[in-house]
Length: 259
Image (cartoon, one colour):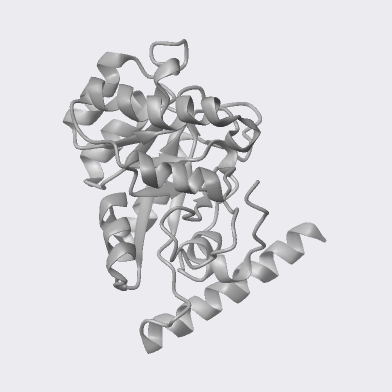
């Protein structure tokens, strides 16, 4: 029954997307912001895991079906300026800073030429399974946008003022010192945020905060609670990809409370 409901939902969204694409941009169209985590072959892949083969297939789907991959900077500027981006735009992001961002994702970035943003945490540098400083520098030099995922990936709504400043402000300062370039975007760990957290991001100099499916703005008009769409091994058919990348997925899916 659960599979049937999911199938019906994606068929409905894909149908709406096809109709909207035929008539042009619609007011409810929202540029899909894709969220990946770990890129790895595992025996029992979860919702946060995509195999290298499936990641390639999903990116081939984007390329072969005429999607225009844009960076987080272009998306945020469009939100700031109140401008609509073209139908079939898409943004690609990765969370957590796993080592596969260098070993598996970087070769695909070079092959496909897609702009990509990776959200990383200074306290995870050089840990087993995570990116090393040398690898992060290589990603930076390859044109990957690097944003903050907090110092320790702590769940922000649980922290006091001092803890929030450490995660949000100190991570920005340390990343900018290491990367020698501005860090303008942050992804909330587990997607959790609230209004004071958004205000702290803004006062710290971030231009945007990226969530998951949390918040009250399903159309991403608020640049400090940008909804993202998870892709993983579960997204294994063209119908599901069309639905999730249609620009109308946010309109149909249920949003969670921000914290």
